[in-house]
Image (tube, rainbow, N blue to C red; front, side, top):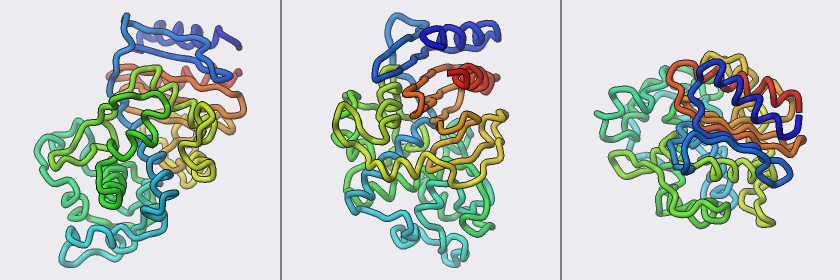
Length: 305
């Protein structure tokens, strides 16, 4: 479809009156086309695209021997365990954080829920929650899975995830002075709150496209990303788009297009990675009601490449 791809996507979003702010098409390691609604490419909240960055951070930390995908999370947070922890909580492992299968009864709060502005200790809130499913039994999307993973990396690294990744991930892919919001206790929000401009999101996608390599430098272990970006568990498509019922990896979504994967964020933040097509499509939006339509449009045209 060539350089007309992005134009088709943007034209459709305009016809649907969808509020796309920036978009970019990268192919062959170059920016082939882009769209912007403002003169400057400003950094905006990527929302849950942040989760995919945390996954990449885990891959780096695991490679450095800081933690293991099969370790039990309670072993690292003994001070937060309730008096009578459930067997489900005791058996929850890092793998279950990555795949959103920890056994939580409820998702707990998201970034815009009232509790977000009231709860002071988010780690305690997680460990005090009810776990009523065996870990690995059920997919339930929760910001807290990603947040706890970030806090675990922080425990082992001695610095929060932003500082840990500053020289390991962000700066090597051209993201200088990264911005990531913090929880009330000073831990990285992790599940969202990471700010990228459209170039930075595209470069992150480019690194994923090369399975962890960027500009000739190894950033994230290839073996890990090849495991993280394929289906590890079922996903129910609970967010209103049929594009999100194709399975979930380690903080990455599968799509209806074979051999592709997606970083996805609320209000229309998308980074679609297509390794076999050497293509990355990045979109930053603020669409309050119909942002799933943006994803449906991206997938419709990307499938024609």
